[in-house]
Picture 1 (cartoon, rainbow, N blue to C red):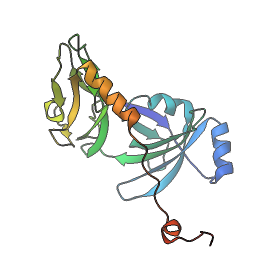
Picture 2 (cartoon, helix red, strand yellow):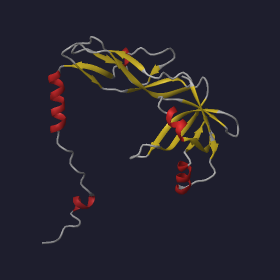
Picture 3 (spheres, one colour):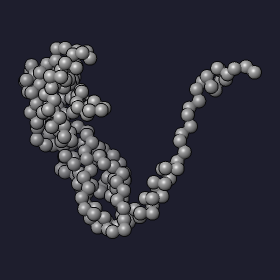
Picture 4 (cartoon, one colour):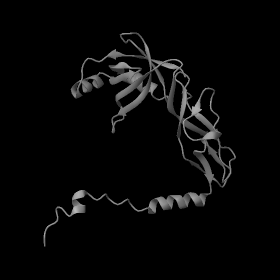
Length: 211
């Protein structure tokens, strides 16, 4: 996987007010940690970071750090719930040759045999891979698959050096009959809501008024 170079700068200001000023300047607060190092607080260029994060499990080469460049993987990304812009990013240090566990997209191509409906159970799957050779996705060709046929995790063709982190019999996708799909949707719609938990006060009769 190619690396994306990002110009990082050490963050000196903290708190909500400082974070707002950083974002108004077009930058994103971030923290960098891992390998037993002290957590570092950074500011990253918002536009460049947003473009980089469009690639799953992108490797970021952070330039401008006190001890030189570092390679990092996005660990957690926070966005504004309404406008969608980046508000904060957690990054974890990685080293060449190091194995990491990540979730990669399951990419489906082709069309199932007419009369069947594709039911995809997993859109991402956890794998272990070398940090600088994380696959961008795992491809599955469903062309011509018929009702009753399925693909399990153990059936996936993984790149060299990549291993599954789920049981091989985990269902990834299968082809079902349209009637089965409709029945499943109806059952989901008719499923009763879970009862609310009983609080200790209610269970003990506290708060009830005497007759």
